[in-house]
Image 1 (spheres, rainbow, N blue to C red):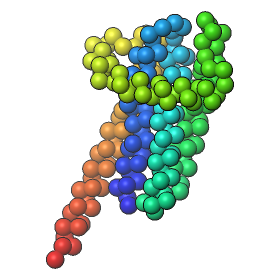
Image 2 (image 1 turned 180 degrees about the vertical axis):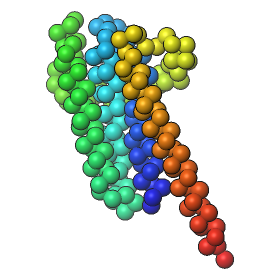
Image 3 (image 1 turned 60 degrees about the vertical axis):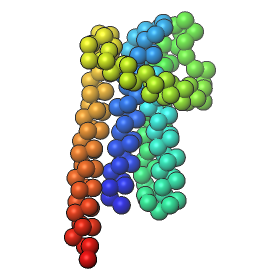
Image 4 (image 1 turned 45 degrees about the vertical axis):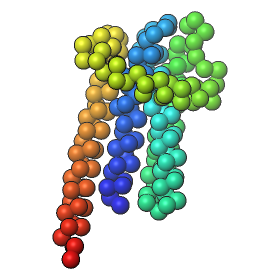
Length: 175
């Protein structure tokens, strides 16, 4: 059970780690450019991923593999992420007619953005290594992405340790 909980939160942390570079890449393809647009696109993608994680958590809860607390917290995280992303989009709403007309269209667009950001991830990682992906005004997003990557890697390390201990415990109980 413990490894299932850690793997669930590892997947939830990947909502930010996997979507960041791809979301910033396709946000920078057309005007208006800038920090708020990149932030709103990234948070829309991550919020959509977290909504999927909350639904997955509810399925696992029905199978009694997770407690209801975990999908509830993931749903709250999704709501906060989407709200902050929608608020960031509001700062640029007057520029070139950019933006969603309401929060529902922002969420729907987030699912399309999620698909795009995951498809762009392999190619974007090469641009990220050369420093060509982020513009100077996106440095806070780069720092936030690196922090989310560190959290994901730390959770992965914890998951491996728990799985190793569980496997060792099962082997010692074998007849």
